[in-house]
Length: 386
Image 1: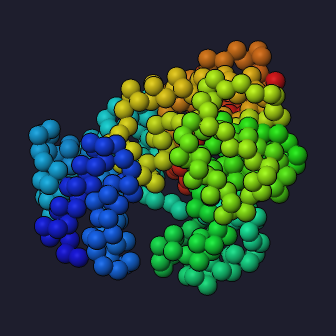
Image 2: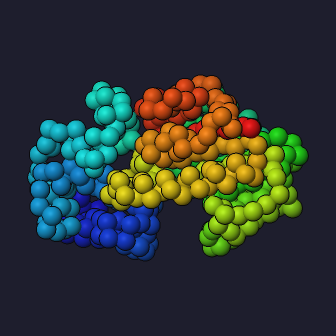
Image 3: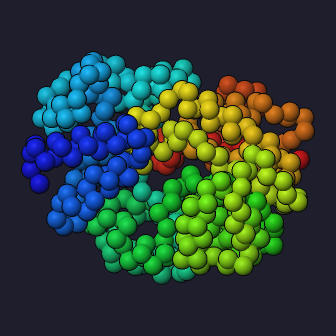
């Protein structure tokens, strides 16, 4: 495919339109635009997809240069492909993020560390979780080597594998197709590690779909926990049921409930997990389209829902793990600050994680996974007990 061809310009412009106007991920936008017909062959598809990702990631870099809200998406694509622009020497322009977002990170971390975070989130890092419900760790590592995957095993979470290089797309690997390994970020797995699911424990997952964390609960408990998995989307719950079955989860020990978890009432559970809906500001490396959809208003809207979910979880269990895939304190530390901490205890159940931001008194008892330190998505995690 010719990089500067009219066809490529049209594809980039159409993907940007889908991301910006319909607020969908880069993956969804690419599929909508191409519908399997943009290119011939897997190698050419991957090349085009990576080009699309890079273009979307550089959107704010281009906007800094153009400084014209009326410029067409096709013109932005043409400028980018031809490298017919200069990078403006301002932090949000250099790393290509919304200015308000960069300003907030700088106020929290200082320029040097904020720059490291922004730079880290501009590079994709792949993690795979060994699914011990389907295979042994030793066996699947050998399979990955035979598929040409170069990797290292996490010292902190031994069933997690950081991919260093690969010869073909991750989704096409045989162990992935057979559900022996699951693409799942390290930070996502660490949330469940903080929950510490045990044999025969009753656990409620209040925001369960698409099901990766529920499946990990079952994996770590060797299919012996009893889980009530709730989500407000019936469609996502149906997808989740199929995924759990393929991952080897004993569905007789998992109940899927269609509900609004901010108000759901149940019997008491041993533990509760709240991986709350959020801005996904910590997952930009996975979907650079998040940069475009990220707004302060969206963050504040999510924070209201997060507080309601956490409050309800504390009514349902005496041990709660709360998390958000966000690097902003409005979706982390400030949620905890609204609680009466005389009634709950905060515990650092993941001792190697970074501490929370020093914006509230209890920050040292909170946990963060940072992209530039842990080479994963940015996550906030809190474990609360009564």
